[in-house]
Image (cartoon, rainbow, N blue to C red):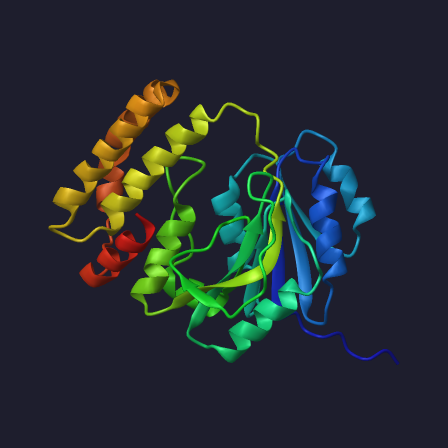
Length: 288
């Protein structure tokens, strides 16, 4: 008789759309990281390329197909809400481990430190390729979405990712701010690397900038306490305006972002749930 399978305690989730050319590197990385209690789910967010054919190469993984694009945030929430595990490992479809022991080190840290809600891996990329020496965990304000490990009990308490009007920008910052307000800690593991290949590099960044600016303003409106909001929101506008003066190629994308923000202002105001003043000030100071 075969021994009973180990119930999954970690869900590794990848959301992908039209990245069949690079997705196997991420999947091979998870295959190499296999351990008792690890389950892997891949959400194919309505890909129109050869992504569906990859199911046959990775039959041990669970595949979920979206017929219409849901976006990365809704897909991450879908993965976490349905996980039924203690931890959620998130990798982008163009990100992968380099050594193979990274997940074990991150899990060991979460097991030893109950107040730690998330582990931020040390991210390398084409514009930051140099490896760091491994060292003691360091508290940080937030993780980067392309590679992190979360304690799901803390994420549930914080309310998962909040929906945003744009497709990109500030989603991790918003969640980490709410986790901090609960007294949770995020730590980075120096030298415990995830490679992020940034497969979007070379594309037009103006739509990303438009989305990122709008999402940042909406996040600020939702989370910044009163009366700090009266200074913080205008301060962000001035900061963006100065950026557009120095980078005029983004000027019209930035103005469009402000128009988006004005359009979404009523809904964002209705969903306003500010964090404590000391939480916001400390977080804002550390991420400014």
